[in-house]
Length: 96
Image (cartoon, rainbow, N blue to C red):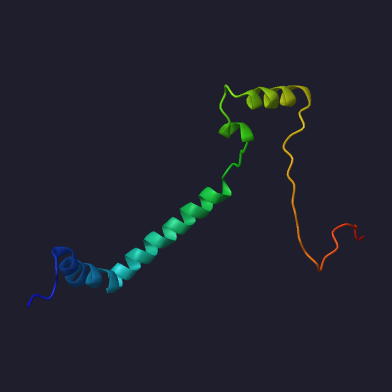
């Protein structure tokens, strides 16, 4: 009876597992992981957040014309509303 059902299992068991659990394999994996973390952290730190509702609205939509006119005449920016439901905190008063 054969030990492996296909060539992929044979490769993973005989070659890949030995390569990844050896000292050089562990060092290579940790080095690649460390480089990935550094590059990802740098990318996240330099990320510019530019979100506008108009990115999701068709240029021919009537609401897009309204938003353009509102920006032209009022320049009010975006409004963000937070809804908080907490029985323990009183958010209606300002503490000094």
